[in-house]
Image (cartoon, rainbow, N blue to C red; front, side, top):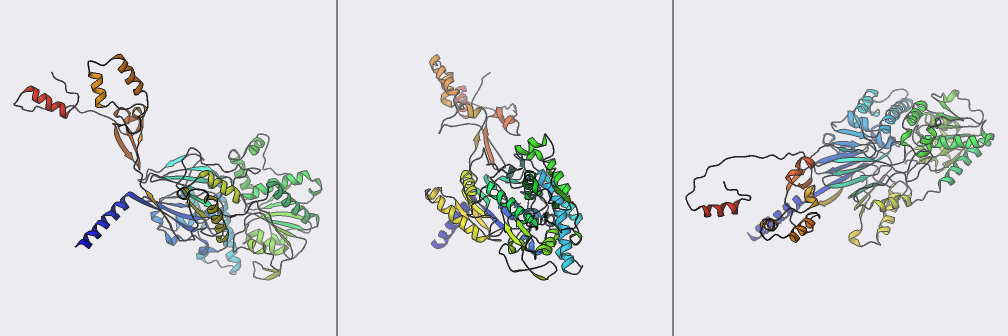
Length: 600
């Protein structure tokens, strides 16, 4: 019997512990110890969020999707998309149109505008690639969504501005706002407040201002977040200076074209492409001997992409905004847009530079030109962004002797292959400094190869070893489908607001002093001085406690309408009670039970 009682006591203790603690679970459905298909499931206090919804560029069809089988789509309340790159956004139409998802989707204005262009182009390229590899027949399972489903998805997207707070009025008190993340036009970090806790999700971010974008901003006016979910793309690598990278980029191109070769620069149609075009157009303007060499921007949506950039120039840095007053900074003097290009009929007999998508050389114009030019040692391929594992762009960086063409033929790789990083991700120093400034209690590393992520985790642990053990944040680097559980003690606190925060409520002693005959003028001055001061620690405060969506406040009845949706009212009633006894006895009883007794 005693053991059963002990077990019952343990159960009671466990029950009390469960009631006073909340568990937040964070599960990478993609980009856990990898780069690609960013998608993170966050669940807390009955609310579920999906952070980003991308595909893996190194895999085709369903294989490139995040691990959606680990989530019930109907349980997801909201999807937050940080920016328009395919590895963060391209599976969104599949999730909204081909699952039971009924929640809401948020992103910034430029992200929505570009996503419609990029995902339409992605759909066209994947259909073309599957058709080419299968003799013209496309397996429906390899097409993640149709054009109609893409449009239906875009119609569901809701917009958020930088620094705008969205409150969804959920029981968990979920609200979030977007911060500028640099990286690409419209890229956002999300600062999320949920169940009395806070999470900062960086997505991809850059702390370096470039020719058209501002650097990411630090979250101001907030306490340190309880959780920071942060990218680890470059691990402990440190970038060369921007001037060095630009000099190497332009110098490599000049060396190829002056040698009579053709330079292919695989890029995604929007994002880093605009930055590289600005750099090269400026370099051609400063070097007249190169101006006879053509530069092509080969993209079906080149002109539409640049229109988007012109539309949102106010969200770029001061350099671009000032140039907009004089003209269009994206009207290039030495670069020609090619809306369509027939690779077989393209005149490439002389030197030239071609920017072509996609950036990972999976298919499309960039892959066709690569297959055509790779055997000539005079030519060159310049990889200017991060190359994802299991893509041709990553493969050729190791300089193999042979490559396989899109048609399946093997051919020698004789052309120059060089890599200069303009991927707009933070390096180790920038990432470490940002994490230190944010000062989170828990750090979760995502969006990085396992080796790079492990090195970053080790470096951060060494960085925090100088702090006392109870001041160090936890650091995790979960692989895909492995959930991280964070246990938080439920906070029980309330803000004192309005008149109660300005002066203490009068106590019974104060009433006695005020009603006493010996209340002197000096005592009145002391009381007035005390009444003008805020409440002191340990002092009793009397008011009305109002709790709404995990947030509590204490206000005086007069302030109810100012600080809460409630209104104060009064009820008057007349009650006749028969009483037999002395009036003095009745007076004593009533004064013990009630305040403010008046006799008529």
